[in-house]
Image (cartoon, rainbow, N blue to C red; front, side, top):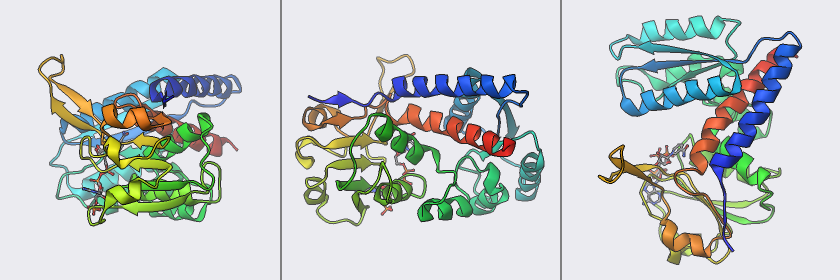
Length: 293
Ligand code: NAP
């Protein structure tokens, strides 16, 4: 029997827990957690992401600030705005929506947020601490996946895990977290990328497969063994005239052939996506709590 890892339902449960915690903080005379986001330019996908983050904050009772800046802003002006929000004691978490216009150095921007407010977990200090297994902000998608594995009680210890993709925001961190001496964790992890030969031979040996490559329906049923746990991170928009939006979302997994073989599988949409969103709220709450103590 295949169990669907329902990120939508689980994120709702976690949001309710967060909202409860916010009420408690306020009842004790504390300030609500406050997430600030900077959006540069008019990229429609980025606008959608930032709007969702604003909506999520509202839902759990966080304060939120969104600074919308023109794509023509200079790097110096942007860094000044980041500094201003970063130094604001009322701000607990600060995120800069990526990608940025080409004339702005993404690395400089990531480094401009202090690690204590870097709830996206992109700052090298947080990445380094995460790799060492020290307390840190873990970026939202890997944190969302780890939370999902934990909440569903999926056994990871001693399992063969294959991660497809090695990006800094998904593939590498999730591979690292799953290999750590922790629960979830303790996996034997293999990372595959665009130069990996014979991917099918590797995925066929996996107990757990995390797919984050951005190629729709890449992982097919004949590439997975019976009973594997499948985590599909991919999101690709494909035109679909039957939908009101004009498109539908596809994951990196061919659901129709993989799901019947899987023990657990995340759907797209409704799997990793909502977990990623709630993970940002988890990090912002954590930042607020660290500021109180
Ligand atoms: P990315 O930065 O584009 O990285 C893609 C990775 O896939 C690279 O490491 C690349 O290898 C590897 N790759 C490409 N083609 C491959 C192939 N044929 N075989 C094996 N590996 C291959 O992507 P990303 O930011 O990690 O995102 C991946 C997908 O997840 C995208 O669809 C994205 O939209 C989605 N995503 C979803 C969420 C969510 O919340 N659900 C969050 C983040 C991302 P090289 O390193 O060799 O180029």
